[in-house]
Structures are given as C-alpha cells and as structure tokens.
Length: 195
Ligand SMILES: CC(C)(COP(=O)(O)OP(=O)(O)OC[C@H]1O[C@@H](n2cnc3c(N)ncnc32)[C@H](O)[C@@H]1OP(=O)(O)O)[C@@H](O)C(=O)NCCC(=O)NCCS
Image (cartoon, rainbow, N blue to C red; front, side):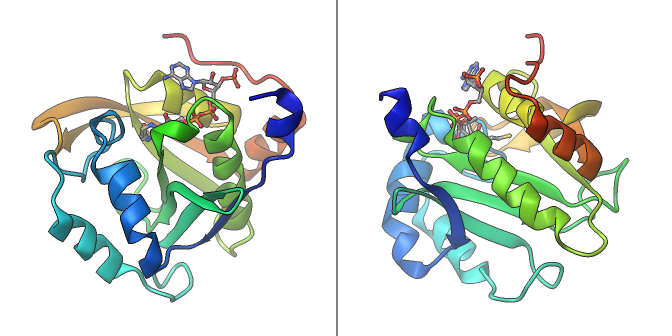
C-alpha cells in the first residue's frame, strides 16, 4: 500500500459487538499464525471458546470490567485489544495489562502500533492508571517492536501456558509509564528490541 494511502487509513477502537463474531472467528480463532502467539485461544479453534469470550463482554466501564475493544481499520473489524484488570502479574499485581491481536491481512502496516497508542491514551485518562504492563512471548519480535514503539521497557520474565501450542512459553514482562509513553510519542522512529 502506498504511504499516502496508509497515512489516510483510519484506525479506531470501539466496543466489541455481537456482529463482530464472524470476523473475530475467521481472522483470529481460525488462523494459527495469530493464535500461536496468544495464551487463551485453543487450536484447533472452538466456537464455544469464542462464544464464552463474547458472553463475558460487559458494557461496564474500567475498572468494573476489562476494557475490551475492536480494532477497526477504515470501518472494518481487524482485531481486538484490551486493557485487562490488575491482578495477573506476580511482580506487578497492581498493574493492568494490555493484550491484542490483529488479523493477518492487516499486519505490517503500523495498525497495531496505532491501536496500542489509542488504548494507552484511553488507559492513562482513567484516574489511578499511571503505569500499564504487557507480556509477550520472547520470540514474538513483532509484538515486542509494537510495545517498544509505545515506550514499553522489559522489566522481567515469566512463563505462560499457550493453549494453542500445548506448552509453556517464556515471556517478557514489560511496563510503560505515562511519562515514557508521552516521551515516546515525540520520537519518530522508536528503538527496536534486539532479537
Ligand atoms: C504482533 C502484531 C500485533 C503486529 O501487528 P502489526 O500491525 O503488523 O505491527 P506494526 O505494523 O505496528 O509493526 C510495528 C513494528 O514492528 C515490526 N514488525 C511487525 N511484525 C514483525 C515481525 N513479525 N517481526 C519483526 N518485526 C515486526 C514492524 O516492521 C514495525 O516496525 P517499524 O515501525 O520500524 O516499521 C500482529 O502481527 C499480530 O496480531 N500477531 C498475532 C497475535 C500477537 O502476536 N499478539 C500479541 C501478543 S503479545
């Protein structure tokens, strides 16, 4: 895609709605290239798993419920991103974590970086949220680059079970402060993690 066209592509976040189910299923659940990087998605895909995800979506604002959003590219559902409630990180039990996936046709165009910036802007606008965490498989170079571009820094490690892979995977734990996020917004080409 030409750069000028990409620059004019709209990336936005909105609540996930029932009519996103089919796109979620096709772009996410049914693509091993996506679910192999996630922890909770099974392989082969199970509709009940996705039904359970949709059933849990709540209109309540964060922190009464996780902030779960559809990533929308020029009006089309492209993936999801969430700000999960604190409590899941051994060393940072007070920090919320972000998690996300994008359908493969949308990769490599800067859309995940834009979606992460959007959810962080919303997260840091919430009273009491000054730092946000994330976890990524250590070999997930794409996601680590996305996080680095938003100002995240690696602060630890953990192991997580990946349902799709059926194994435990080594992960980086990363955090970003509001200040680091704002500083990073000013930088054009952010540093990448060394692989
Ligand atoms: C990881 C993922 C979100 C990246 O989405 P994306 O929209 O392609 O990412 P971006 O285009 O914003 O890329 C950001 C940077 O990372 C780089 N990058 C993206 N994918 C990469 C990869 N597989 N390997 C190395 N670098 C990669 C891009 O080149 C870009 O660098 P640049 O700004 O210098 O050009 C997407 O591939 C995905 O959904 N993967 C499956 C699910 C997943 O991994 N979720 C995250 C779990 S922690």
